[in-house]
Image (tube, rainbow, N blue to C red):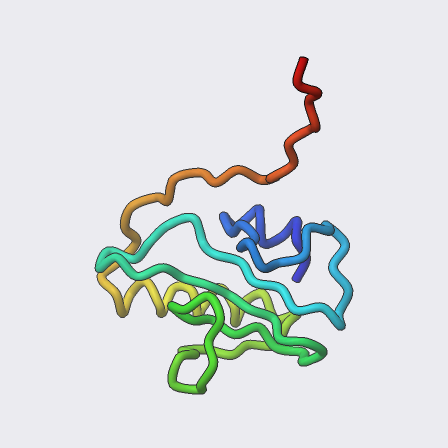
Length: 113
């Protein structure tokens, strides 16, 4: 999966994801889906360092296997979409859209006069 593909589905990088659009396989990345479930739970995906899987969770950084509800092959887009559908079905459907977050925290330096 690529950054472009994930963004086309409605995911956006979390604050802990490296900012580069060309993420290396050896880097971990985390994204959040732009819609909550009907019961208010968020959907996060994470690619752990060097492991060829994508983990889906309601937590940004799942630490235990109980926190992960699906693990799919990193390049298996159909399994990924099935896992997303199963999540929203289990939680009452798709709920509210999240407010847009700024994509950059860059603020240019301005000299005080």
